[in-house]
Length: 292
Ligand SMILES: C[S@@+](CC[C@H](N)C(=O)[O-])C[C@H]1O[C@@H](n2cnc3c(N)ncnc32)[C@H](O)[C@@H]1O
Image (cartoon, rainbow, N blue to C red):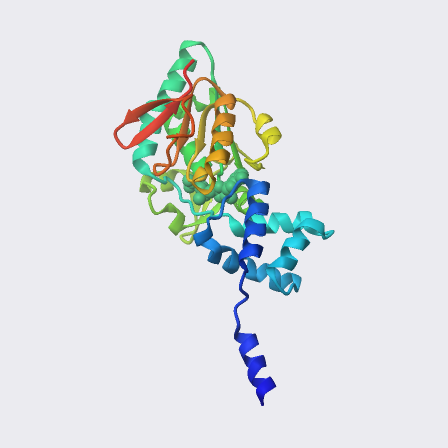
């Protein structure tokens, strides 16, 4: 009777992470991708990793930590780990006031500067692109800005993320109505093929965007990204500590062409992170420029 009772309890028991297991995993995750999980978010690791432990038949988080370092399947598991610890929340036309500033001021400045110099190339980098809504939104805005002139331009939007799963989904370019909640109806009409339930990105947008896996913690990978006129990195550095933010922002600075622009999330700031950019204040957005 007493053993049946204790079995019932252990079956219903949630797997708890000890303080030392949490510290080991937190430091390991930080060393691999720069995402810093604060002490008060310990539950996040517990909840998000529980399924991985079950799937791998491991009895506690200490075994999982060991697996990540020494098992022959560690590289594959690291990918799974990235998928479960990242937050991939995004949508088309996210933060419309900021995108209005982008469309009317930043993009037009870059386009006009290129025209003035007899050039027709445009390079935009969407770092931390999640399931693709951000880079495809940028492709729509570029289409809107250049209109019929677009075919004469050489345009590339480089879109990167850490998670292979979100990139697979981004490449498919198939979305639900929910992702379009802040998208103007005329844009939906123009740039998606829809059967009423699913919305598929039109080929002329897909051809502008090139998806690839990049870890922002990896300086060598960052150096290989083609130089950009504009870098978008919105709602990504919020997950990093100051040291990692400094590294990433400095990599964006090096990547940008002179006079280029950096656009970060509206709740993010470069305060105490970088003094190299010139902040430009617009109604509804602060944009950072690399002075030329
Ligand atoms: C909240 S989403 C933001 C998506 C989009 N930029 C937006 O604002 O809607 C953050 C993305 O950053 C990615 N990310 C986090 N750490 C990363 C790293 N070290 N390297 C590359 N991408 C990373 C995550 O996988 C996630 O898809």
